[in-house]
Amino acid sequence: MQDTWFRFIRNIEEEEQDLSKSKLWSFIYEASSTAAAAVFVIFILFTFVFRAVGVVGNSMLPTLSNGDWLLVMPSSTVSRGDVIVSTEPNKLDKSIVKRVIAIEGDVVNIDFYLNQVSVNGQVLDEKYISEPIAAKGDVEFPLTVPAGKVFVLGDNRNDSTDSRWEAVGCVDVDYILGTAEFKILPKPQKIN
Image 1: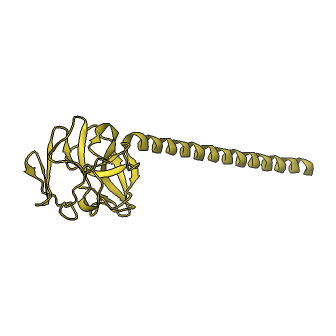
Image 2 (image 1 turned 90 degrees about the horizontal axis):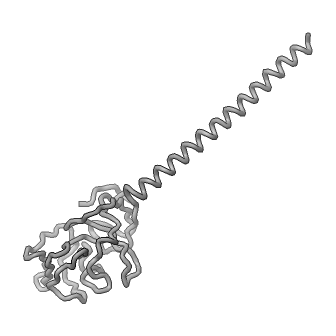
């Protein structure tokens, strides 16, 4: 009788161990499935919905600072005033973050004596700049923005290599990664 009792107890212990192993494998399977699904969702979001892009340099002060991280939304169209990220190859060998000032067909003129930017004869009210524009660049004005391109300037006008310089020139819209909608680091906030 005692032998039967020991076998009974041992069977219960073996069943508990099997059940414990089964629960462990079930937990591992569920955790790995959840992790794989999360990685897939993040991949889809970062590929088709938005991207995180870091700002390098101070050309967008006071709006953006060196080291800020932006949430960039893909966009099929850009408008005047949008902050964009362009991956177009340029003589600087880097992507740029700039503000769209004019779109294709617009006439841009910069009066460096009055420190004013005008588009199609209208002087821009630029509350977002750090100081009035004084740095000339090597592009002649007035300039008509070519088809499929945009004219961009940094908000820190006197410390920005932008469309005033042939090294950047007018940016091809096909190379625009998207518009910067939010600054996510160091302090989250909407951009204009």
